[in-house]
Image (cartoon, rainbow over all chains, first blue to last red; front, side, top):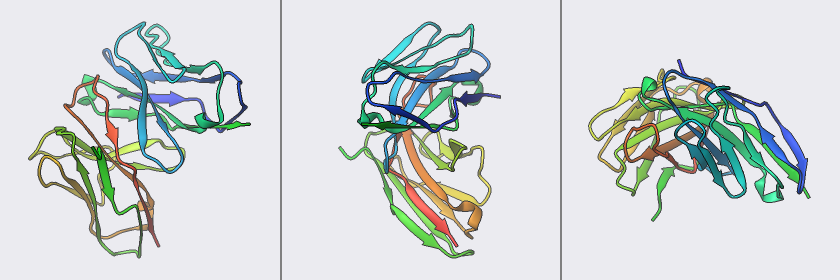
Length: 113
Length: 114
């Protein structure tokens, strides 16, 4: 079945540091890949997505590239801000699972001023 | 445009009590979902409704029932709450159940079962 493995947290960074959160997946066929973000006390919202191999999703300074050869979709940001403190979830969706989302465990990121 | 709304925001129950979590979306989406979020486990799908009039079990359906009341509303019922159901519950929706489709989430209901 489908599964997502992401880097365990928590991660604590200083402002303007570089952030990477690793995400690897197992799926049959050609899944779509997502990063969702959950700010404190809120629901999840889509951060970015990629729907085919070598696609790069980007939003709010975050980027992730769909790497089929390594089954990965790592999230990166070059210079984080305090406002980026949140929980980040990697997820996938594929026809083999009737398009339902499969989530990773989530990575808590805290950015210090 | 409210998006996905959930009520209540917080609830405390005693073991054996029942309750219904309400979810509504105003985006004319066909598909709706209920998830639970537990520490270190990400989100797990409880039930979903691909379209009005249909419901299906997800990964962790035991102890829950759902009703797709109409296109807008999708409720989750706990008939006899157990401490293992202490969690944060999220409702979500999207246009169609296709792989590229973004799901939109509500703000969540934090449930504690004593």
